[in-house]
Image (tube, rainbow, N blue to C red; front, side):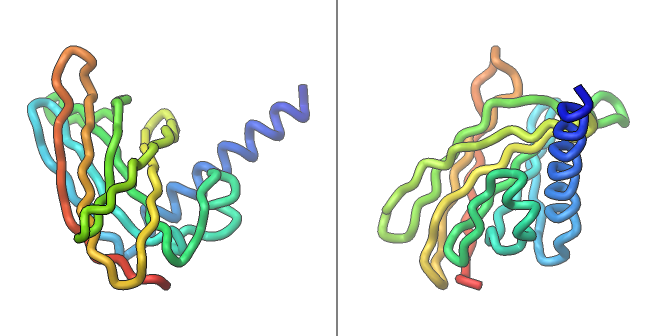
Length: 153
């Protein structure tokens, strides 16, 4: 039982390190859209921004030519914003229409819920990222599109 508690604590510490790494990157410009009662926050960045030990604990593949997409959804309730679960899917397409599906993994910290997905790119490549985010199973997903240039680091 003690080993299980130690393993759970290490897992939580690893996840917290990921979040600290993601949230402390001054180069990352977070974007969001407000739709209905929700705010959908999203950003994309090179996977090498994540420290090696943190990436290993989170199952993130670090590479000079791999990017991460981070998505979180907050429900607005008056002045309060609460993280909520959602169904998140996406695609990354380069300028010659080569498309990659982005599979997302959920990281639930209780007070924060994040969805992380990865895709590959070539140096100095503009990628069109399309996301479908569905926080309410009874409503259609919200569609978000943005472009970003990635560089091999």
